[in-house]
Image (cartoon, rainbow, N blue to C red; front, side, top):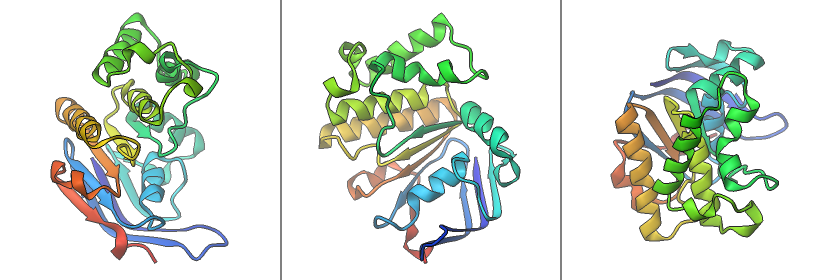
Length: 218
């Protein structure tokens, strides 16, 4: 689960500030973060994942006190506990889709690449409808296909927490419903926590909790 309390973050040399008194997302719960661009949705996802260190307050994720972890501990925590779907995909253009999906296992000693993991990558690709794209490189695929590969990579290590930044932003209406259903299904099957930052109000009925960020950005 995710528990945030008295969290404050300010970017250096910027007027932007994020201040959250309390936010709790339970194990197995699916939550959507809404609000205009620049209100702090992505910042909160990065704080939860330990990509950027918090400045004050408490941030507990699956019993980890993230604000107390050093750089190395945050990296290990992110590898083992967190799956992140980045808004810009963060796929590597020199790897094909299959190797992009497996990339966390190739760069992190805390994860062991096995035949079972490779089969899981194929199964995830099949669920996302990109089995026939696994041998292709980023420049040979569409934005929607890259989005699907990025989601596969986020789920490959079976994380307890999934953080998705605009995961439906490059999908047509039918496909975005399918992708949200896949993410929700994963959360329920694994009793994982799902947190999605989105501008798309058409998908909000799919979530257990909707949080409006406008009250937290300064």
